Length: 300
Image (cartoon, rainbow, N blue to C red; front, side, top):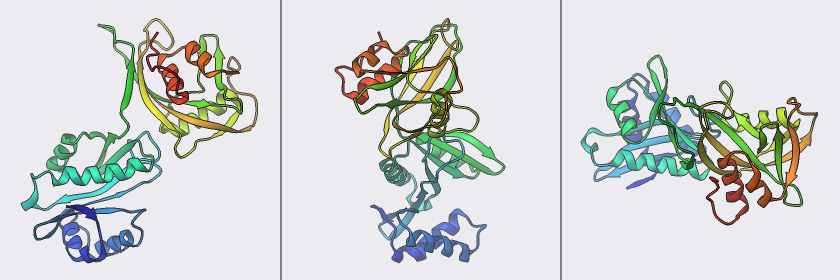
């Protein structure tokens, strides 16, 4: 049985933590457990209860950023343990699912995990769908996408090497239900763009809208629309790109200045017109999905 940790688990919880992190002192483990028990929604822990009591645990949190993750917030698994006599029964995967469900219900699009260089732990992460993204000394970070890529538009051409790129775009509506679109020399687009440096999806979107429109935006807690990807025509914008994009509903809160990009002009269009005229198919899909228009096949 997988359940939330309670004060009565403290004794065996300390022993399991010492088995996972033997280099730490007992007092440090007790302090960490007390912190988690005092704030269970901020630092949740699940216990695997076996025939003779607790036989495993997983500790999670929801920090603003996680090394290697591109989403914010992102879930983080800080500790994951199953006792030797209970391994191989699927207990570890059930603990992972409990933490992933909790994080996903709170808006996390990705789950990160931190561990050491132990090959068994690395293999366990990979088996459960994580991929290794960052190695820092003896510490390894893994991530797993909780929100799948719903649709992939376009087909890759043989012999073409596509550069993978991540980005974020916003569906912004006004009081009349019209959608904000940006007209450029290449066509019509939703506000947003590609990530730069160590940005996550949300910070990328906030920066792009400010640069394009000179506006500040707010992103509601439940504003995530979906994740989609698109193979770009090698002869068109940006060359051979494979873009993976998160779409969000957003609201303009303040117009600060003119946009930095002078060839970007803001227009407001009705949803049906927007869905038919946007340049990129995954952006058309996002409008259809957001506004409840008929059909999601926007590849034409």
